[in-house]
Image (tube, rainbow, N blue to C red; front, side, top):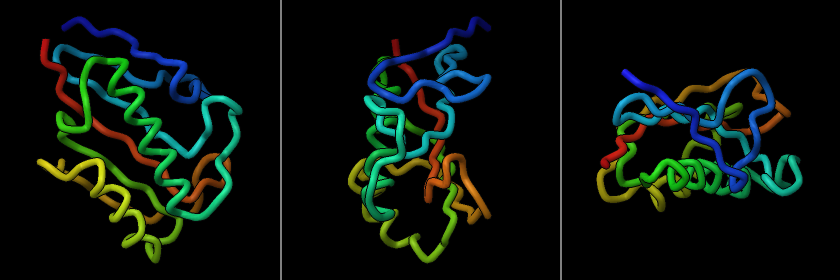
Length: 128
């Protein structure tokens, strides 16, 4: 199976030895996105809602770069540093994943890169 790197300047550059996403066949594996502003490379200011919106914007940019969309996402993992934010994250999440919500796991973790409050990764289908 052929695989290819997917990258866009509309989402933050990788901050380690990984890629924004990898296409393998008709599947897209998007690395976990934190609320980095791609223009500044800094965590966005604000609460969990502002951070979640930025994370989802970053995911959307990578999905578009690969020729797919939120509608084709089949699996996500949501990492939160405080499960008390679950309801607010769900409100933001539901605005992007409303039609056919993907399978999902949500876990609380002790810390995320750059002290962000949320990180989300996903797997999507690419239809040629």
